[in-house]
Image 1 (spheres, rainbow, N blue to C red):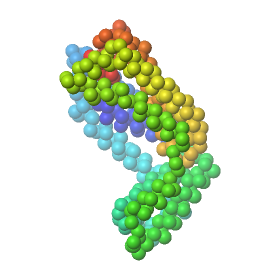
Image 2 (cartoon, rainbow, N blue to C red):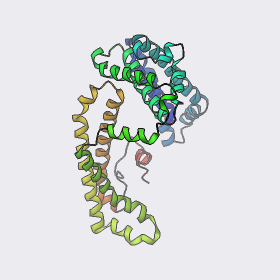
Image 3 (cartoon, rainbow, N blue to C red):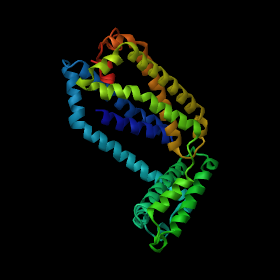
Image 4 (cartoon, rainbow, N blue to C red):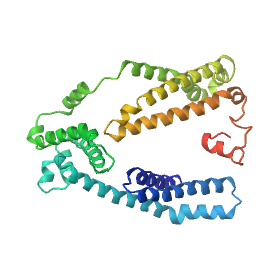
Length: 325
């Protein structure tokens, strides 16, 4: 069910974000409504198994309609992808490879280069394809500012010239993957000092929880399990949880602070990574704060929200998310 709903949701987001006309964006509401309906029917049927109507609709979605939903979304995305890619190639002719200008298709030119000197040329070709695809999509979008694409256009054009110059077996004669790996590591920007500190702190904060989850699950370590469920051990876990929340809050603040810089990048992956980090940090703060606010009750064996009724289904919603019995 989640696969069907995710396919519909992805199609809706694509139409809403990439649509050039108002009618296309309005049409995005149809697959979005379908995704919401699938989720609602699935959860309702699971919460009330005695409702035959809900169960019948659930079976239809899982059996008869599910495959067609996925195939339809993939087909629409493929058609949209081909149209945008062709439009981008017409607007950015300077980033085509020499093999493409000679009549070969883009997949033929890329795979021909990728197989020259494995695995180095394969890695280069895949990275180039990713960047050029981002450029072609952005160039085909009507709301893209031309000046914003200039750094990416120059990077892709430079890579195109380098690939044309090295598109022969003689060029790669005597070149080893180890040499290329060493050069790539030397050119790669170093991780900032504060990022290293945050990484070390994150690893240190996970040690008590990992010890409790891994070592404390064996019958022979009963004493260790009891140590972490009461007294000093419990306070250690709570303290580590509070420190983790503080670290997550710092990550959230840093991500929000860097959002404007990421939004100025011509690569959509950079902005998507920042948005994903913001969503993960915000969700971790909410769930972590909820669990820590009731740590004493949880230590006594109670569920985190056992005293609340969510959506009229008592603990059903919480059990499905947190797997709390």
